[in-house]
Image 1 (cartoon, rainbow over the protein chains, first blue to last red):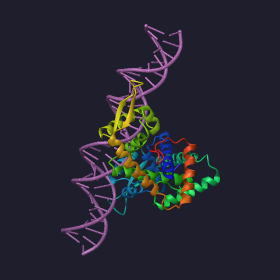
Image 2: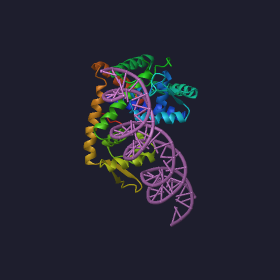
Image 3: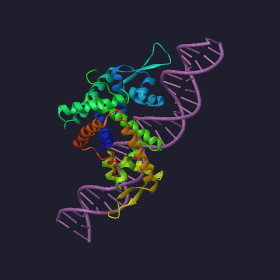
Image 4: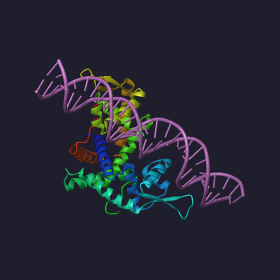
Length: 145
Length: 145
DNA sequence: GCTGGTAATTCGTGCTGCGAACAACTATGT
DNA sequence: ACATAGTTGTTCGCAGCACGAATTACCAGC
């Protein structure tokens, strides 16, 4: 199998696992991603736009919908009255942790057919690709949350 | 970097490359994926549902929109008058090939930081993951199209 | 102060995806 | 032959997603 095909099809698997994890927690993939990003710290809207690779105008709605579910909150930025800091609510924090753990479990299970050495090699190679291409940080390192 | 993180973030990269390739050809990612699947042969609606991992009802609209752009066509199945075979039009075939080549180029470029040996190792490991998990065939093997 | 850039939002448009309900048809069992 | 069961796709209503253009509010430099 070519590298391109392997990348595309594994990406499909990851997406499906992620979507499935969200579904079991009542989250869309986008809302799940938002929660994961916010686990690290609050973000401004423009900052989220960069992190998620979306237009600023797309974020207003995503944050609105997620806020309506009580998972996220807009807080005023004390330094700049134009700006806003989007932060997890307590319920959002709790759900984010459960969702995150579930997503990790499912995605980790994709590598069940590999032994420890192979997993390490794959992580190293793929990690190199990620760093080389400056992939946005849409997922914090497990154990750092 | 953990395997999970590497998988999620590389998946993000692949998605972005795929979306970007579609954009330069006036295709949404879903329409692009539809064209890629149909490059191999015509599919029935139910079959597409399985291949793309979507509900049947989601496909009606996707095929409609893609057909409206003249890229795809519904043909009657001679064996079963309920059924339909979705096939590429000549324009669709041409666009699919251009899009496919572009997407491959962009995704292949993600591995530019790796030497030949590393690329081979990554392809083998990731290919193993894909096969272990019975990833749907959303992308044909380059050179077989 | 004026002016230029920045932070978010609003608006309109089109695309996605789902489940439930449905119509048309094939296949099966008696 | 005929009722029944299962299939193939479609329709409908709904919620969400993503974009660009235009707008409002505000900060910062001169």
